[in-house]
Image (tube, rainbow, N blue to C red; front, side, top):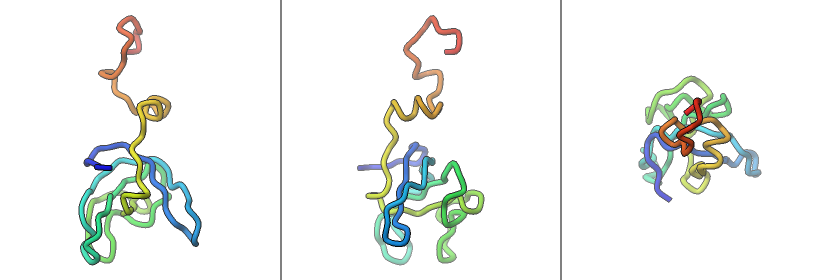
Length: 104
């Protein structure tokens, strides 16, 4: 799967050998890890469940508040579906189909 800066995503992580959901966030970096050369997706999480502020091992990939950043392997990141975006209130008015709705 391909990711782009600005994508809304859900992120999982391995913590103490178990897969845990970190939550929703916004992609701020797509590229290779500066040491391993392996692909990574940098995400600013909506809630402070991350491990960093966008800087990992002294290398800044993006900037965000402390504990809101994560630099994940792509296999732990998934794009949110339209249904998930709608439920989270992340869709702009331009995506609404109801022309008669005053909220749109």
